Length: 152
Image (cartoon, rainbow, N blue to C red; front, side, top):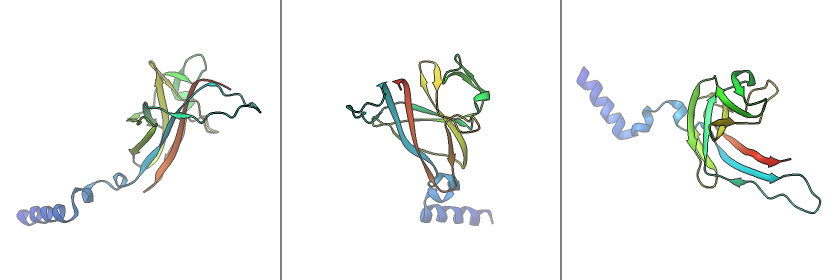
């Protein structure tokens, strides 16, 4: 009996490959997008068209959905010295700022780092920080802006 199970498993691996044994969320589910660096004067001007943001090679930190009450901020800014929710994973962007990461279905918050501080300045109506929802069998599109050196 045990030999039949092993034989069946080996045949399945041969026919379908190891991808058949990955969890369902690994197949094509998570988030992908771009991390942009925005700096300098971003004030609107009738004479000057703003430059498009530049992609940047950096690291994006993914945490479970995080509310403003679950971080320690630096003087009420968008810089955080501590995040009390669970760290999920970090992902490196390429030189154009592109990233792609597989994740299970759920809600997440995104951060980048400047020196030792985490940064994120986008919130939803419940004060969740940079929320992103990953839906079953979907790649959620994301644009994240590092604009701590910009003036608006």
